[in-house]
Image (cartoon, rainbow, N blue to C red; front, side, top):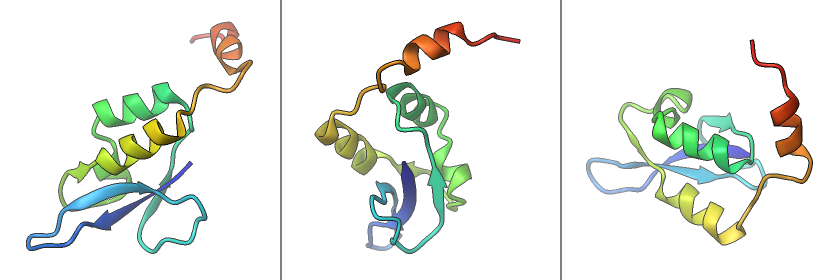
Length: 88
């Protein structure tokens, strides 16, 4: 899933993380696995500000709304592969 940081306007500008479904939005982008645990972990770690190189924290509400609207789940078979993966 491709994500982009965009300003939400207004002085001072607020940064938001939006999903770039077509890959054509301007701005710095980042890739994230389209799995619930990856999105939740990135939000909890506040990783979007670093990955998208924004000068301040970013609002993840548009990303969370997009995720809820599309109701994405882990693809079948991925969870079992994760369980079988050797941890080092």
